[in-house]
Image (cartoon, protein in one colour):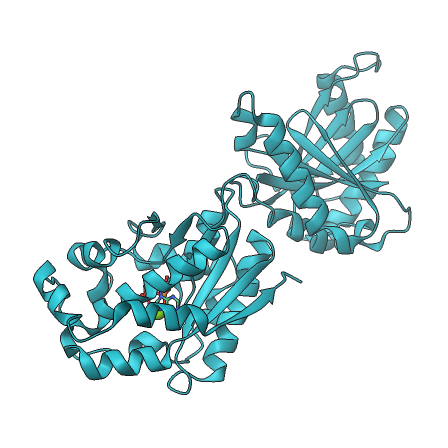
Length: 399
Ligand code: ATP
Ligand code: MG
């Protein structure tokens, strides 16, 4: 039978509370893998085994069919890597037979593979051959049975891993996962999610530290279109593939932006607007049991992301604002965006509310007095109240 081996990472460094991280991880895996049939998920030391309870589960049929469930496991934070392993009982002959079947499947997918080596672990000391002998004899068996393969000790194309425990296991290669800590082991955060490249990455990064998310999006219909909103919903869904289901709070921001546009100086608009956004986000966060705000800001990237501008927006809220991208350059952020499957959606060309009402020459280094003056003719408290009240809730599920 085929089973999946998932390796845990940072959790294994935890001390007394390791157990609670492991329980959360198994519960997250259970939820994420619900649609792949009846499974047994159990842990042994730093590994988690996932076995089908029904013999004909198609997701475990062979290496090719297992790609989908393996990919789903890589999206669960706390897992470092995954392999599809063949599990069987028996003597050395059965090891040879099962290895032959596995390598045949592997080579069908990777005809370019020419070199290999065997690595072996023997947990069950009553097995009559020791590890070096298993490696040697299984290596010879593979050479006899697969024309064109040769042994290479350093950097072979693939490694045949054999483990002898209560059962025997054979597997080759592994799919890398996203590491991190299981979602649910930290408090909930409210992600300010725009349609851009940065904020979905910021959400992904905080979720990778165990943080479940809600998201808030400021929508200025008709200045921002329904397509822009749909794009944010799509991005929320992509992020939820990692962070779990979330509520997306869509704030109707049109009237507030128009008021600001009319009643405050153009060059301060970006900062004033961001100050109001953060206050609305904080109120919605409080109502939804979120303990921090998260943005995709990166120092110096645009006018509103200078240190002075950040200070001016920081001071209006009490909650911590987490900015996981603050020290990353754009290229690094784009790389993560591609890796998590958000990039293609993020670059769709729909306007963001910030880009429409933005001044030609925004103040990049505002003095605190400028900020106060810019808000003289605005009823900020009323705007915040109005924003919170006019919010639509959308439930987002990863699948
Ligand atoms: P992004 O790529 O995430 O859109 P950006 O580079 O466009 O970021 P800004 O427009 O200055 O930068 O926005 C900085 C951060 O403010 C965003 O990363 C996001 O967290 C938040 N933000 C901006 N616009 C909105 C919006 N319309 N709704 C919710 N959050 C927003
Ligand atoms: Mg943006």
